[in-house]
Picture 1 (cartoon, helix red, strand yellow):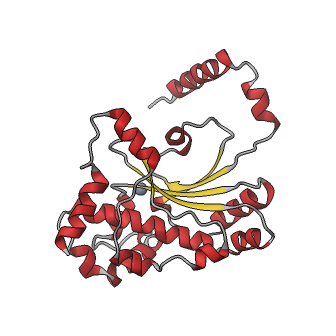
Picture 2 (spheres, rainbow, N blue to C red; picture 1 turned 45 degrees about the horizontal axis):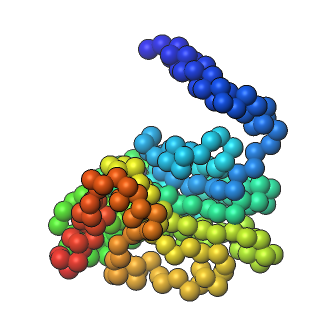
Length: 249
Ligand code: ZN
């Protein structure tokens, strides 16, 4: 298969970018000054810049299968060090998505691939609380519940990375967020709470308690978006599965 069409699309993109902003690329060539770092899933449907409506230069990105934070992952640690200590980014957003294939894998039985090592923290959380997860009868709802909990677990892991702790200790502004994206409606939800200090991190309830206490992920912005789009009434993905959790336990 020829990839020539990608070069054609690239030229068309450059033309579109410079039509209203002739200096766009010369400005980009100067220096990147993103204020955001995104830790997301490699899923091709969840691209940070598109989802956030941002241009190149506005978000520093790290992606992997199921947006897992391994505190021994040299790739992630190096990216975080650069983002925090050199770029001085102010927000780290761990963003997963509903219907994540990595989460589906972690909740299944097959452990024959390399990716199963990567997903092990999610597998262990599932095994520890298996009766609660299995009580969610609808399989999609069960996966989506774990998608949310995985994000909350990874936010806690980011908060324990020494680079982050050191930034807080020297008074640098750095807030951690856990968000989830709906591939079926394009909307982001804030799973909260925002963590901006070691004290706020230490005040978080444990991930095990979060498994036992489901809440509906939402935000004012999201409610706005749902109203704006009209047709999206409550009953979408997250409401449905939270209801499922409540009714089946
Ligand atoms: Zn995914």
